Amino acid sequence: MLIAVLASAMTAATLMATAFGLYEEARQSRLHVEADRKNRFRPLRRPPINSCNR
Image 1 (cartoon, rainbow, N blue to C red):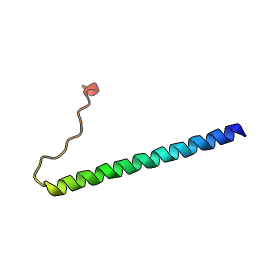
Image 2 (image 1 turned 45 degrees about the vertical axis):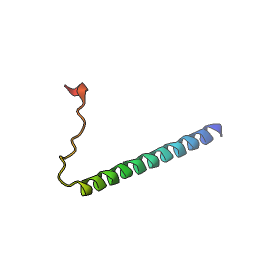
Image 3 (image 1 turned 45 degrees about the horizontal axis):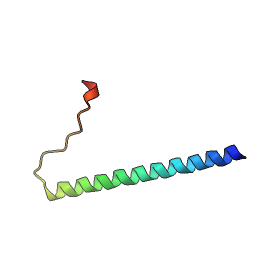
Image 4 (image 1 turned 90 degrees about the horizontal axis):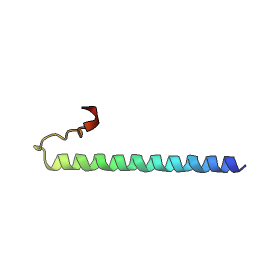
């Protein structure tokens, strides 16, 4: 019984964390779209360079 309660609690926590992560990702995307609309001629954003892959 205790294992089932702990498993369901962990599942709920994982789902909440996933939902929060998706919400933050969508918010960042909206902010980038707004910035692109306001300043159309700025250079394109480039992904960060990962120094580990050199």
